[in-house]
Image 1: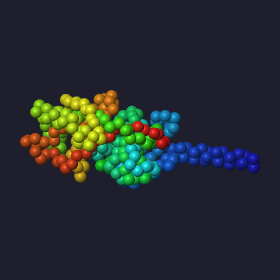
Image 2: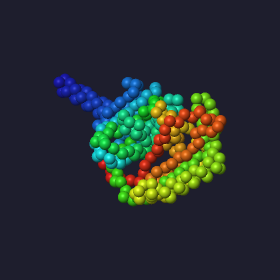
Image 3: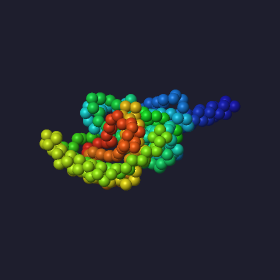
Length: 305
């Protein structure tokens, strides 16, 4: 009887160990800290079934609107460029009020620095965030379902994280892309706003870009020259982002689908997106307080993790 009791005890111990290991594999987020705007609202799991590579993916599920993140502190050198990438898959991700810039994304916690935000249901895609460390010696890199602008619902899987340090290029010739959206077709505060550029508008923009390209050497004190490409986008811009400080502006998410094919085929240091945000009919309907840039390229990268 004693022998049978020992066998039963070992079986129980093995079962407990298996259950504990299974629990650990599903809930272990390694060195990442989990954080929520609304506590105990979202579920954080490691997923062994839905994954991009051999390792279990990191999964966030928010059945109710929330801003949920897992992040870790990373040491950086001052005034250096960095790039963070990961693979992301989404299912039914919906931002509150369809706010731009909210969804599955990479971000620096406590700042507005972030990647493009993925929404809806999308298969695995690579996203990236480029930032400059400025005077910081460490940053909190977060993988997020939500955003500093708002909350969302849905599920996101994150996998294959990389963190790279850039080397600033010594080439002083910068390449610019200028995307001119002929039409603005948005609904703001329940009002439909349709604004189109005239041929004179487009010609004025072309002339301004041409003068910029020709005069940048003098403007920079012989520190840089510039080449530029101009693209006329026929499809209307149908979405604008909003921020209390900046008012309405064009975020990467608002134009990504319209320009990404061109951007992927070229290496641009800066991208200009030009749209009309008012005319005689819609003089005060689109609040604009300031401008926000999109992104900076032109860097070489050394992988850190």
